[in-house]
Length: 128
Image (cartoon, rainbow, N blue to C red; front, side, top):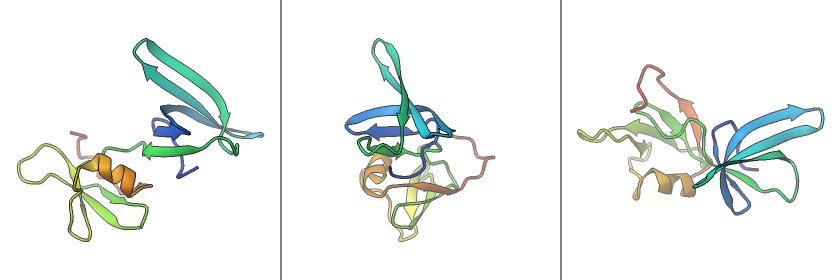
């Protein structure tokens, strides 16, 4: 498993993309409940034991994703990224401590620089 999984995280379970419905800890261990959304509704699956060797679980997006203006994020290599709105744009992107923007946007960063961790968020800043 990569990173700490929280409710609302977008996950990759072996070859499936799904969403965490809940994570529960019992005397038998930690269990994951999944929520698959498709054209005919929703399919809930679980409990799945997170520690099972045959179950590979990766968090694709942290529960606090996407970034907001003034956020501070840290990527999987420990590099700090700052949430900014370049120019007059409404869209927030990340600017690294090394002075670079993501070449192809935030989706590229999720895949190439993970796992991500939110270091700081100004809760007074609206999410848009």
